[in-house]
Length: 85
Image (cartoon, rainbow, N blue to C red; front, side, top):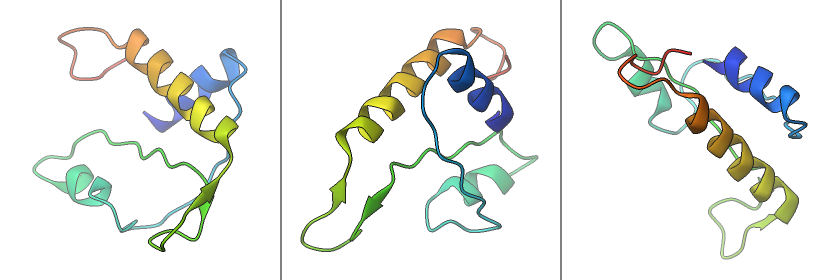
């Protein structure tokens, strides 16, 4: 799923940044991925500073790029195929 999302970003000239996270990311992604027989999971984050403080700072372009990527990925999902591309 992650490889497909990267491919979609590249094919649509959507800027992305990659970050390797081994194991628990502090989100629900890990628990979802390893539950039952496993669930395809990809984690999208918006780069920012000062998370969980009184203010968070990010670049509006990063928010827009993330929204574009989500929209493109969803538009390429095939119905009834359990998120297979």
